[in-house]
Length: 195
Ligand code: CUA
Image (tube, rainbow, N blue to C red; front, top):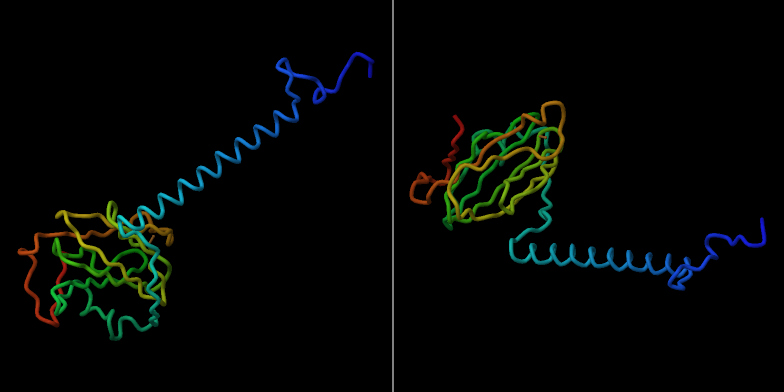
């Protein structure tokens, strides 16, 4: 190496800063940007959690997925929407490859709604866009989500966990009707909008 050549990292920049110092400064800047992003995401999670009641599903209830059809809460005659004594409603659904039963869930607006779902086979997802409803439906467990719909209309309900070759076609609906249009149900009546 000739006398006049200097190693690139030893060479001084025009403004007199050593390249190593410049590298350290750049690295520190990126660490600060990353910490800022982490902090921002944490704030978003906490704020949406509080203001939009978004929270990880925490209901741990187990059920035997092999005997769902034989009786109990998820027997076919008990699926659909039920009226509770306190005026709220409970909608029960079963997810399996590749459909939800019932395929159209009827619920009243401005009324507390509790969804209870389970799966007969693999993991499915239950998501209602633009609401706080988003949960996995895991075989062996009952997923429970509570919400109140303020807008009437039809919400599409795509399965949002890859569950097999028919996953893309696994789609159901939730129809929200004004509270006064929701049928009066006795304790053991169930309703749905499935055709
Ligand atoms: Cu069920 Cu994807």
